Image (cartoon, rainbow, N blue to C red; front, side):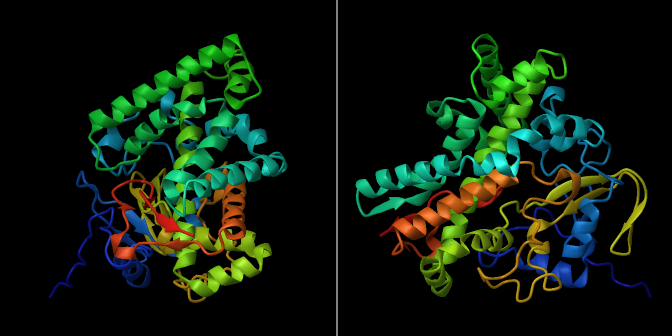
Length: 403
């Protein structure tokens, strides 16, 4: 009598249960089948890894590749599989040594010391946005009035992108992240964004300024280290990552804290806890529901499970950040917890380059809100809120608040 084969679940896993928590199925897999097959849209069956130790180990294993051009790479949608233009494949989708070469072009831009020098400017931006928000009444949509504009303003200034164009790139970047969009829609959005940044780079070449795109053109394109399309692709990656992720993390973080009145009160009373609170919110609210994609370059084992060369691997950050083996009572929110082992920014050579900027923005945003609006309240029940599902970035479309 043959043993019953476990059912292979579809991936991405459908959002069920509390929207502030990973789907229950991920917790079940983490406890019962921590390295297990899942089924993607195209019938492929990559491995899903859900335990903290296994994900962390896998992220520093050079036998797992980030290169989307490798056979077996686990694309999460038809649009993602077809939206691959050579010039738009930046270092995040490359392996060393090319990954290392291109990443080094940006390392100095995101050094902690350089980011810290921006704190007064970001604090001033926080205050200006809160002034505008509170000056127009006693209620607002926090996403529209604060969470989206803050990182958009910051990344636009860094890159040298006119902020008045933020609606143009925000609409298209959301479409690029949508796993339910058609290949035609995603390719059109990518093409428009690339063309926009190509035109901007041309302007910077003729009239350079103190911004990142000007420096990429002068220091990398002009000497021949990057093509113009590669400059546009690198800027595009930074533009999308630089506002979508942080904006949604701000919204989810405020919502999570307001759902725990004791944690909110503690933060209002002790604002010195803001940095620790940010780390706990990054752990507790993972905004990348699909996790990180890899493909095996050669045979290996993950958590004792054999993985063959050419097989796809999905590293589930949200499940790993709620692993009770790594964090005591992981489903609880505790802003005094030591959460530094979370993997919201990944781990290993591909760890998020922009994490110092993201941390800074989150700290400034949270500190500003608890200082200026200690009585902030969310005005809708959880089940009435409009969550973003079906994309590579999880978050909120709106967050109605009053004060």
